[in-house]
Amino acid sequence: MIKKIKQRGSVLALVLVAGTFFLVVFTGLLGYVGGQRHVSVKKTQREQAFNIAEAGIEMYRWHVASQLNGRTAAQIADYWLGVPLGVPSYDREYRDPQGKAVGQFSLEVTPPQEGSTIIEVQSTGWHYDNPEVKRKIKARLRKPAWSEYVVVANDIMRFGQGTEIWGPIHSNNGIRFDGIAHNVISSSKQEYWDPDTGSMKDGVWTAMPDPSQVFLAGTDFPVAVTDFTGMIGNLAEMKAQAQIYLDPYSGLNKYGYHLILKDDGTMDVYKVTSRGSSSHHINSESFYKNYPLPDSGVIFVEDDATIEGEISDKKITIACADLETGSDYSNIYIEKDITYAGYDGSEMLGLIAQGDITVGLYSEDDLRIDGALVAQNGRIGRDYYNFWTSWQYYKRDTITIFGALATNQRYGFAWVCGGTVYCSGYEYRNIEFDPELMYNTPPYFPTQNEYQLDLWEEEK
Image 1 (tube, helix red, strand yellow):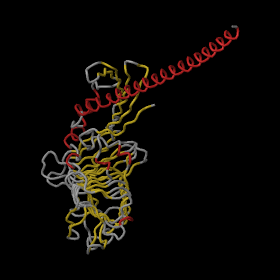
Image 2 (cartoon, helix red, strand yellow):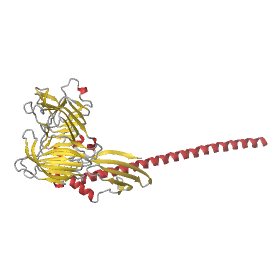
Image 3 (cartoon, one colour):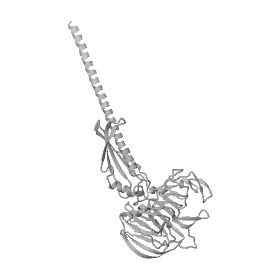
Image 4 (cartoon, rainbow, N blue to C red):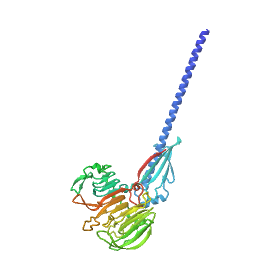
């Protein structure tokens, strides 16, 4: 009897031990399942918060497109002076597809600085089930500038030997490139008729024996046409916004003005009384006035202008156009250096000619031009001069451009004779892209019409 009781006690003990074991295991399993469910719910809530934050960015992109796309620079400036959405913040409830309010996003918008089109927007999103879990997304919107290309053209282009270019190049027509290109060269043509060779050529090609030594970053063609008409800028708006305006001078004789930019923050202006018809050189002039330059602004010349000098801590656009009579396009002439005092982004110069931007016969042997240049209806370049024109000046050594070029017609600072022999202009041409032009442009400078998403990242 006592033995049976002991056996029953042992069995009961085993049952209790087993039950306790299974209870511990089951409790642990429940805890694990509960923990995993908690992790899954939290992960879901984080994804929901992220989706809500992303919806905030998309909503603001739609708002910018509806309010700012296609507007002039002055209209956009007026918008930011008003009560812009998201400045300093804007909160909005987020609803699911069934219309139920499930969360909220908060926008914080940083307006563009003067001379820039960059809009920074931060969107913070959260779900009502767990408002403590928040996700933040930062985006950057901007109007791409034509000056994102170091050279953009609307015509057939030829870059000869002795040309070295840093920065992307694009033409809506064909490109022959025989120099050294450090960035991608693109064309909107698959093939084109090359007038120099009298034959069909690829959209981008070289006559050099080893293309890999020419196109260091490759070529890309055909690509979409760049809307050149949308990049030439609104000259009438520039005239209306100009801090300095020089009216038409000399009646029917378009001798124009001589502008000397000075590192003391001023500009000397001369009236040109005689100019060479082919050399474009100033033969005589008279002093007109000294102007203080605005820190950031437009100089509008209703005539031709010869420009030279240096700017310091200024962001200036100089536009030359005949908008009063419309009888002739106004041009810009350059013979001497146009430079920045420093190269930290504090100086920026835009030169816009309704007609041509021309380097004259008596240009410096080592010429430097800092700035973004636009020839709206004409071309950027140097005329052909031969030995009999001037044996001292018909050939020049080196031209360096730091900035960007946009030319409606075929550009060129050098000429070849007999197909390949350099015979006039600058033997060496260096064109270097100014990276500041990616995100900042000279005042009222041409940009594309639509804002684009330039940067998207989650902030931790």
